[in-house]
Image 1: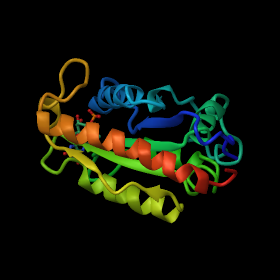
Image 2: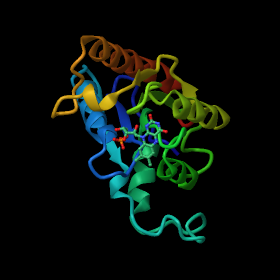
Image 3: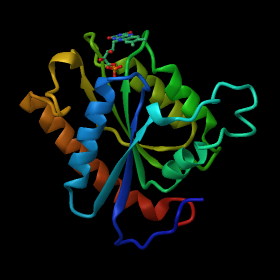
Length: 196
Ligand SMILES: Cc1cc2nc3c(=O)[nH]c(=O)nc-3n(C[C@H](O)[C@H](O)[C@H](O)COP(=O)(O)O)c2cc1C
C-alpha cells in the first residue's frame, strides 16, 4: 500500500529510465528530467535505473519469489506519487527489460490510480511513439491515471548535450512544461489514491 502522506507534503516522482543499455541516452535524459522536477517547489524526484536491477529476473521462479534486491525497486514505485517513464524504441516497441520490470511489480498496487507520464526517445524519426502508445495500453489496463501530454524526441543522439539536457529550445520547453504540469497533476490526484 502506498504511504499515507499529508496533503501539503512534497510530491515524490520516480523517473523510470526504461532500458538497462550501458551508456543509454534514456538514462542521461532521465537524470536531466529528475533534475528539472527537483527544481520545482514541493517536488522530490529520483531515477529508477534499470541497469541496477538484480540478477535472476528471468528465472522462471521470479514471479513468485522476487530476486534479492528487487524489493528496493518495487518499494520505490509504491512510495511514488507519480511515475514518469522515459522509454527508448527498440525494434518498434518498448525494451524487453522494461516490460519484465513492469510484470514483476506487485499487482494491482504498483499502478492502480497512480499518475504516469511518458517521454519517448529514438534514433529514428518517430520519437518512440510506438512504445509510448504500447505503454499507455499497459498502464490503462492497470488503471493508472494517464497524464495526457507526452514528449517525443526523434533523432535523440543529436538532441542532448553531455549532461543529457536538450539542446533545442523546443524540446527543453516541452520537457519543462511536462515536468511542471505533471507534478501539479500528481498533487491533485494524490487524495484520490488508494490509502489516501
Ligand atoms: C536493441 C535496439 C533496438 C533498437 N530499435 C530501434 C527502433 O526500432 N527504432 C528506432 O528509431 N531506434 C531503435 N534503436 C535505437 C535507439 O532509438 C537509440 O539507441 C536511442 O539512442 C535510444 O536508445 P538508448 O536509450 O538505448 O540510447 C534501437 C536500439 C537498440 C539497442
